[in-house]
Image 1 (spheres, helix red, strand yellow):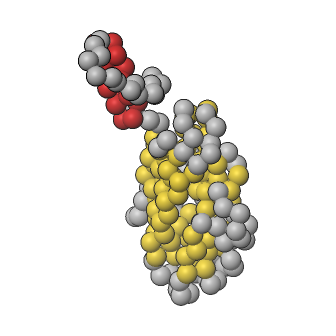
Image 2: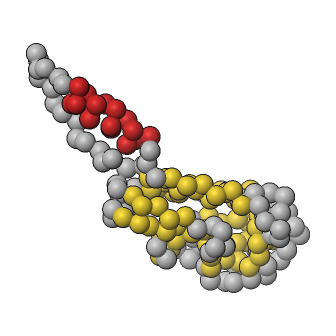
Length: 165
């Protein structure tokens, strides 16, 4: 059900049951039933990449498609990362195949010392200006050198998106 613009009531106006249902029940249901999805991914092996350009972490299992009626979506990601060589690695996400940020290191840089140090990696971003309809969100990453590892065996990778406006 769509959002109904709230009525400006006047003094002594008689309110019908239909108006109350539309203004209160239907608008509350709209707010509480906005499209959302959460993926908690535990896999049989960790994710790895040596790519120095942004690539999908897992295009099959870490992909969210929402059909929205508004224009803003809140997106979040968390996981535990490690590097076995190289100075740092970078995380971002795509909306309909286009990266959210345009900077070379993405939305999040994770810096560690060499040697399998486990580091929490997390971001939350508000995507605004979307059109009504279907949109696909996917987390992406890259290594600056060496091999980047995102733990998925004993630590879940969490990716979520929800319409907020």
